[in-house]
Image (tube, rainbow, N blue to C red; front, top):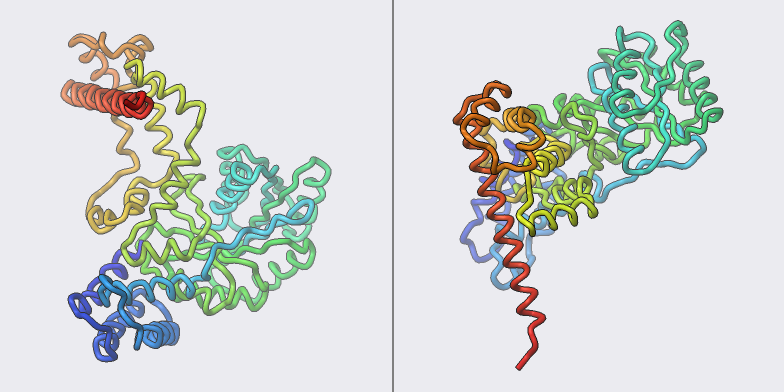
Length: 442
């Protein structure tokens, strides 16, 4: 995400490297390259020009603080303006109303149905909501079935009327059903078209009028660039929606939609989505996205993702096992499962400052853990709990059972042993530090 833009911005700021003062000449030269980078990322020309003009105005005449290079000062100004351009701060979804009705709109292929499932999972898991999904797409083949499959994945029921071809009535009936059965949130997945047309707009407007949703979210494929911004404007003129959802950010996207859309429709980006996993939905934070665009990573989001999987009681149990050198393959497997729940591995790694560029050309497969999991699953309960029993014969049997070879099994066991030793050393150092701190002073 944003790799090309990040590279070009980095090159642009290099023109100021080593210069002791920001001047009109070197700022103009740098911002000319910044404008080119934004245009290449499919940002609207007027938005790109206004943006660089604002940065230039703020940079000129600004004194450079001691030990801060001009390039760093300009990067700071650019970062702040980028964040402001994308909305300034994150915006929550409106959950007022009983039930809260959320209408999901967008073109066909933008990822509306998948997003509806992800949003249901997000509201259920993170907001404690009781959610009902409503299948309002009566045109696309298998749309209702797709929503039912997604609903099963996140354990959220789906209201559907397969024989009814009136989406307005389906939406109204879904809300009645929600009230009757105690659901406090209804997410209505609506039909899309391959292009904006009047029939589509009239239909979605009729649903809005009938159910008066608390929140209307427009879903747009980030890979469509400036076209996404234009489509958003047409939808907003009809629906006056509350927020934008950018999907497919893990694809080959130049980033123009994320940067420009707020300036055009004056509505915040509320969520960003990448990948097919139901957990792969994030609240949009403009300042964090600006960090990522400028190659600074997003360590805050990474920590938040880790905290979501963090179980305090489980951590205490694990700490006790490590202290007693009882960490086993069951614990190892559990840690792998928690990492996998955090999301796309390459995306996670790119959140670490400086890592984005380093891993760009690496093929980090989300199935990277499959071989490890297969080996551990091929072990008996005794072998998992007591790794010391893994002799040559057992390792050969595990290799055959997991579809791997003896070298891969040996490598995993060696890595496991080294991990356990490192954990033990860290625990011993922590104990020693505590003892030193608590030792009586002489």
